[in-house]
Length: 217
Image 1 (cartoon, rainbow, N blue to C red):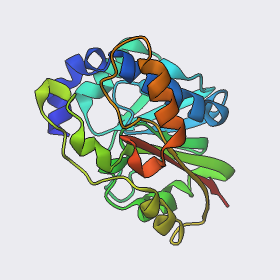
Image 2: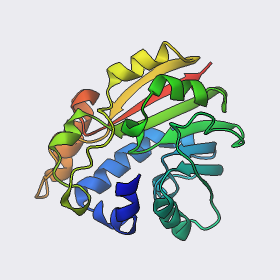
Image 3: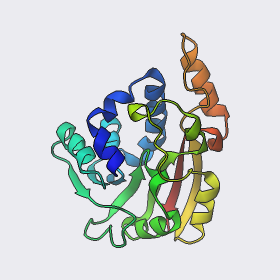
């Protein structure tokens, strides 16, 4: 995507506030049981969030921004990546099979979740997991965006959409989890405690980020 091409050089550094780290820690805890020691396909892999925070046994990353892939390879030079757009039919051709398909901060850019789940069910092994994370409706109230501009591309990522998509693909819906609490700027020593409580107690639809998961039948 052109907007990510232009900001790839500062993407990682921009998301380094305490609240960003807390969000990363929560998403890491949610994904670790599925991703660590697994053969992983990473959709919208960007600069390599999965490799930065988790430990897959084998990894292939897919993204449509060449500069973002360049940042990933600078950090993880032995990784296999492919410049592909998952909205283009046949994008999954030749990639192989995987235990897990995952995405982080990219789900809201997938135009047809049902079709994507159907595609992924052909490359994720039966019993494997699809875990897709993106930005929910609350993203539109968030002020901390790259270069001071809101990234308004894509659509709001919601648990209701997850359930609808399950009807058209051979998958079992496992659930949804929020990954970013309502309160973004939380100064002071109690900020982390307040953020953690809000992240634990509020429904996923009221978070900035939402993770949905499915098991392939």
